Structure formats: C-alpha cells, structure tokens
Image (cartoon, rainbow, N blue to C red; front, side, top):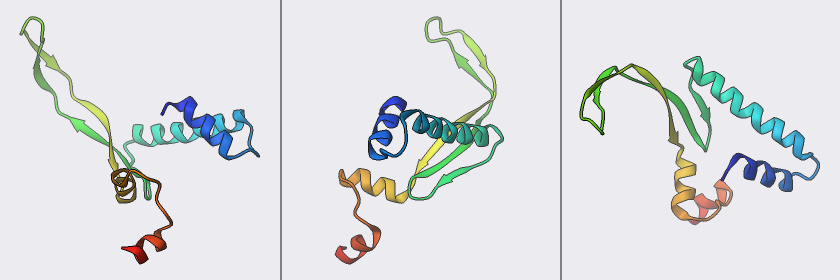
Length: 106
C-alpha cells in the first residue's frame, strides 16, 4: 500500500474528514515518527510495532564490479519490529476480531 492509497482508504472510512485533512494527518504522523527516530528515540505503537534506530559500524566493503576494497562509513538505519497483534493478524491472513472474543474462542 502506498501513502496515497492509505490516504484514500482513510478518507473513505472517515467521510466527515476531507481528503486534504487526512493527508495532513498522515503526513504529520510520519513526520513525528521520523523526527523521533532522528533524535534517537524509540517509537512504539501498541499492537502494531516499534520503530528504533540501529547503528552500523564502519567497515570495509567491496565494489561488486571491480572487487576493490571500499571504506563504508558508520551509519544509522531505521529498524521496525512488528508487534504481537500485527504478527498474529498477518499470519491468520484475515482481519482480527476484538481481543476479548479471541481469548474466548482460543
């Protein structure tokens, strides 16, 4: 799903909001997650997952075309770990029912 598809689905599910309002909301959420990660903070969305920043040490890489050794600088990369509820919903392949109904049927 692309960002524009997400905006379209949220607009359809929330007819009281305009498409422009939904676009601003989605952009604001993404900007806040990005800003928090840039500061080195962890972002946790319960039931969905957690975004963190992992550091990759400097190393010597190889140019795949020539085989020449190339220095690769240290860098920070975003990392996402899916939450338990998201993993379960993806593995079931269908939308989740409410949590209390799941416990009763399990």
